[in-house]
Length: 317
Image 1 (cartoon, rainbow, N blue to C red):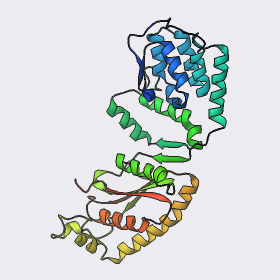
Image 2 (image 1 turned 135 degrees about the vertical axis):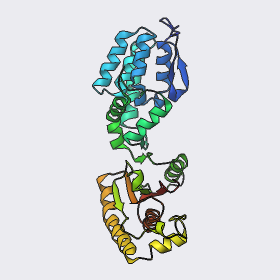
Image 3 (image 1 turned 30 degrees about the horizontal axis):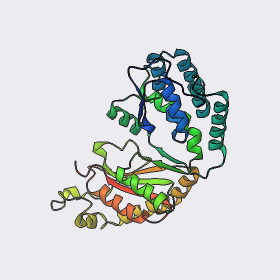
Image 4 (image 1 turned 45 degrees about the vertical axis):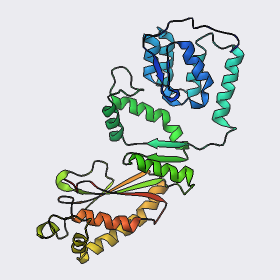
C-alpha cells in the first residue's frame, strides 16, 4: 500500500468469515487487505452469494454487491472478481492494482509447477452433507434451494475439474480411506487410481443402492437362510461361503461377471469415469450377496490401476 489508510467506511455488526484464512472481517478495507496479501489461498469459494449479501446488508455497498452478482451469473473469472473488490476502495494505488493483475495472470498461466487435486461427490451426498450442517450453500441465491448452489458451484469449477491431475470421488469414502488415498498419491508417490470401484452387497427387500451403476441379482442361487445351521450366519463366514460356492452356478456366475468387468473397467477409465458402484443383491443381504461380493472383491483386488472398496450394506439389519 502506498500510505497508511484507516478504515473509512461502515463497520459491520456481523462479521464475514474468510474460512480459508480463518479470519473474521468487519470492513471492506479488511477484506481487500486479506485478499491482496493471501492471493495464493484465494479460490472460487470466495465467489458466493453470502459475501454479496454481507457487502450489501452489513456495509451498504449495494452497487458493489450487484456488480459481483452479475459477475457470478455470467461465470466471470476469479481474477476479475477479486480485482473488482480491490478497486472498490482507495486502499491500493493504480500501480499496485496493475501489479496485482500481473501476479494473478502469472499464477494462472505460468511460472509454477503445481498439481491440481479435485475432491468431488455425488449430488445426493452433497445435499445430505449440507443438510446435516444445517447451512445453506454459499453459492445459493437468496431464497434458492441448496441444489441451485451445488449446480452453480459445479459450473464454476467445471474447467478446474477438467484440468485436475487427480480427481477423487469422496461419496463413499470414510475419512481414513480418503487420508489413505492422499497418502498413497502424495506421500508414497504410488500410481494414481483414477477410478474408485465400490463392491456393495445388499438385500432387495431393503431396496437397491441409490448410487449403484451396475446391479446383479444372485437370488437364483440356493438360499442358506433355509438351512437351519446356516440361518444365523453370514457370507463372511466359511460355512456359508462353502455352501454358496458349492454350486457350479456360483462359479460360472463369478467367472462371467469377472470377465465382463475385466473388459468394462479399462473402458470406464478411458472414458473418464471416476466412480463405479457394483451392487450384488440377494433377498436379505446376508448370505448369497455377501459371499459373491467377497469373491468378486478377491478377483478384482490388485488387478489394475483402480481403487477398490468392499462393503456389506444390510449384513447387520
